[in-house]
Length: 154
Image (cartoon, rainbow, N blue to C red; front, side):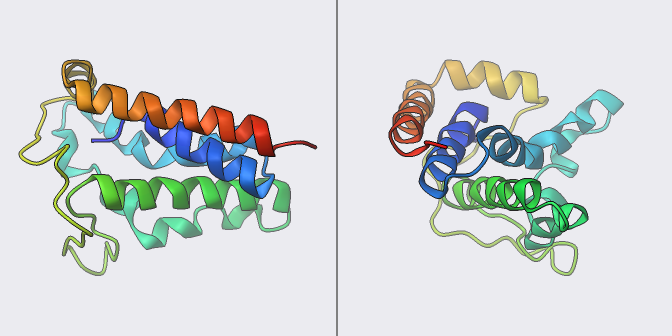
């Protein structure tokens, strides 16, 4: 399970290389995981998580900003970065949801195999207890900050 700092690191790399607005790109990179907030309703969050917001259809979410490319483009690339990272990191995404419930994957993730949590809070707690996750994502965040600082200049 990729926690926000890994997604933020990748979004910083993309924002830096493509010279996109970093804040909007970062927002786009974390929006797909907001469906995990369903646990606040008392419903089991895994029934909702990584479905619509992790599908190719969700790449259309920036369309309401079509007339504002300074918002639409970074938002699109932020969401795209999230989907790509989760596609690599997480074993199986429903990329054609809601048309198909089939999960597609590149390889079975060593980081989340057998991983299931009751709430996002427990998932985040467990993330700190797994050094590979913690240091892997921290490394991605640091690399993202470095790449962004080297390439992003307005």
